[in-house]
Image 1 (tube, rainbow, N blue to C red):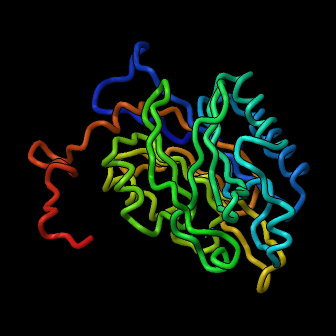
Image 2 (cartoon, rainbow, N blue to C red):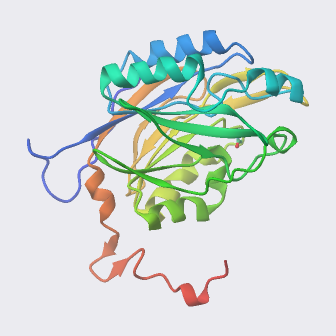
Length: 282
Ligand code: ACM
């Protein structure tokens, strides 16, 4: 478990009336195919930290480094069903909290690398990963959900999954739609994302919670090692909480999400109003 490194304060003094939202990222080391064991471990880490929102890794229960379509088929779940959904929904209900977690979604037309957002009253939405990474293209359909926002009691949130970060348009779209917080289940193998997210947050003036996994997984075309460093980042590009590269854990930060409504950089600059879209290519 890590401590909160800093409490994000906008320009005004924090006082007893300021409502903050506690955002937790849960860093696990799933074992490929062992869904019950992976679920139990995730829940035990979640129980260590009281929070308003929990973010778990991409494909948090299934593992990542698949070898065959048969293996993917055996692990897939319908959205809003299955032991992981039931257990995480019960957790959300008992804690009056919200949970975003990656799962392998079974649909009529094939499989999606998806993220569910659920709350005390049940499933809120499912996001299907837009930008598939490397061998994911062998097993998953490219996501068709687009980048949606959800109005939760504490603020407006959006979701993206792992490699989506590489495409600035993903977070920009969520921010332009009004997201104050981006929930980002991940299975990062390249080293860049944790630091790059500081820029993503700064250029969009939003909070982000990236939950990554750790460990090395055999399978696929050889072992993959995941880089951890799950984190919560502020609209000013500050790391509010971050875990290490190799150990499981949970860490959280108290955030004033209203600060993500402000897009000003100086008294004369605003990251949205200053955009010159007539000069941009899509
Ligand atoms: C990734 O998108 N899981 C690297």
